[in-house]
Length: 131
Ligand code: ZN
Image 1 (tube, rainbow, N blue to C red):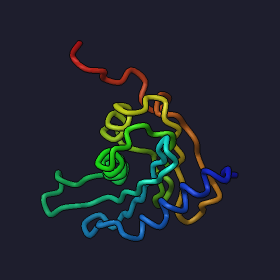
Image 2: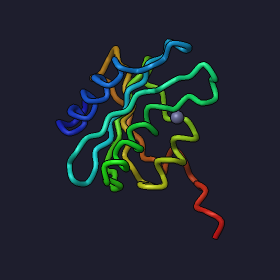
Image 3: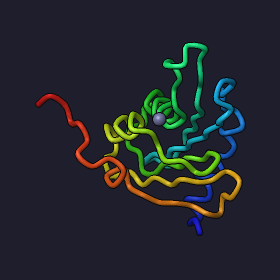
Image 4: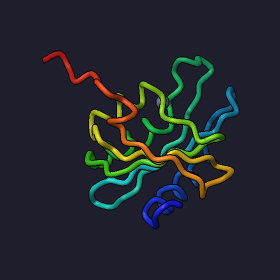
């Protein structure tokens, strides 16, 4: 069972999912990131006729937060059919800001059943830059 905080985040991700632009895959994904200030930023997958330009919901949410001056992420919820896990690119992208970020993965048809992981578990040995 999700906690009250997780439920709020999941609901925001579910709300966002309805606005996904996924005319090619028909696979809507919604994401919601909570920041240290308590604000929640939503994201959806945004596809493109040039498939490779597609942006995932997780990165859209992270970019929205950063654009509003919020770089301290405390949790992310990702909702989709079957409750998929963030792709490798999104794991690396999110780890830039919060390497141990709690990730909640949710099947949008069964939002009471959640899977939890930390970004650290999902992406061990992340690239940390050319230092
Ligand atoms: Zn992704």
